Amino acid sequence: MKQKLKQMRKHALQIFEAGLQAVDPVAAINHYVTVSDSVLSIGEQQFKLKDYDRILIIGAGKAVAPMAKTMEDHLGNRIAAGVIVTKDEHGLPLKKVKVCEASHPVPDARGVAGTEEILALVKKAGERDLIICLISGGGSALLIAPVEGISLADKQEATRLLLACGATIHEFNAVRKHLSRVKGGRLAQKAYPATVTSLILSDVVGDDLDVIASGPTVPDSSTFHDAEQILKDYGIWDQLAANVRNHLEKGSAGQIADTPKPGDTAFKKCSQVLVGTNLQALEAAGKAAEHLGYRPLILSSKIEGEAREVAKFYTAIAKEVLSSSNPMETPVCVLAGGETTVTISGEGLGGRNQEFALAAAMAIDGVKNLVVLSGGTDGTDGPTDAAGAMADGATLARAREKNMDPKDFLRRNDSYRFFQKLDDLVMTGPTRTNVMDIYMLLVGSVG
Image 1 (cartoon, rainbow, N blue to C red):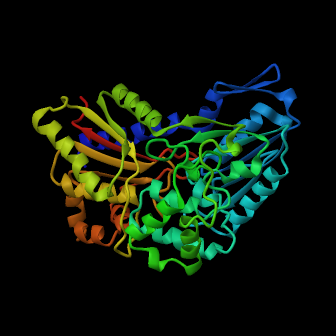
Image 2: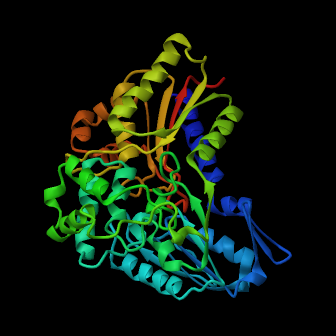
């Protein structure tokens, strides 16, 4: 591999790492939380600790362990009890808060058990209790409490169907909220009349609070009818368990109370602070790129769509920069964020970032001085141990030397094995944060 290309690939990893550091949960909490003169400040909210008999910590998501540890550092023995649920290998040893690890993205019985412990804690909370709810991406699968009459197996199958059909996270969570006793504001209902303040690390496009972890402590904008229609539109309604369909039909007909909406009493004593977003990660990545000698260009933090199609559009921008210096001259670092989807049709192994990178590699075959990196900020892309993958104009040439057909790998949704054979997977391990994905193009070499 030529020296300039090696340097660009190294720079891409450095820029990605800068984006991750900017949304580190510890830094995010410390930025918004202080304790001084027996007053807990969270953003613009202030809580006089003498007004509360107990402080309880609850939460769910991939980043909640470091978030909870930081809250322990601030509050120490003021915390009476706590329970959080996080993904396997994402836990940390805590002093006051119990850590439950569980499966993600398909929920399991450990997630159910951890959620029941959270529910038991909040149901006993009174009006002189302060509940600090820590929420991050992954919370929807980890905070799992099926409604009566629906089993864990039913929800697991619904999750698998939604993961495979290409539904957006907004659509996915609209369904999950209507099969749950905690999502869509129902956790706030269980906690009332306690005071609830939520610290939220966003992993959804648009940072919609009712979508992040399926909005357990905020009003829900979706309805039973929405959930039913989404499942029918994607053609998976008839594949669901009969009791799931029956529950949603009853809800659509008004026979079951919908999730709490704005103005509900449950939210009288609730507040929320958004402590980390994808845009923050992109801005930090842009500064790192500029320090390395690239002109940063942030397109959007709201990218959605089928991964392979978005990759084609994204790489077209790089080609335009190379051919016409539009919208700016090289060297350029083009950044974007969001969350694409993959409609699974093959039996391969991969994730949306790896599929994005494979489609991009096919689009830039033979193009010089161009590097693509697509990575998930949580360090886990789909059901794999990779955060994503990196590609350049020589990627397909290297694949052909190994008799690998990229079209075949893409057709089978087998991007993980494609990049594994080329040693081009981006491996970070668990980052314990999650603000969606970072898409990066380095166009033109520095120096």
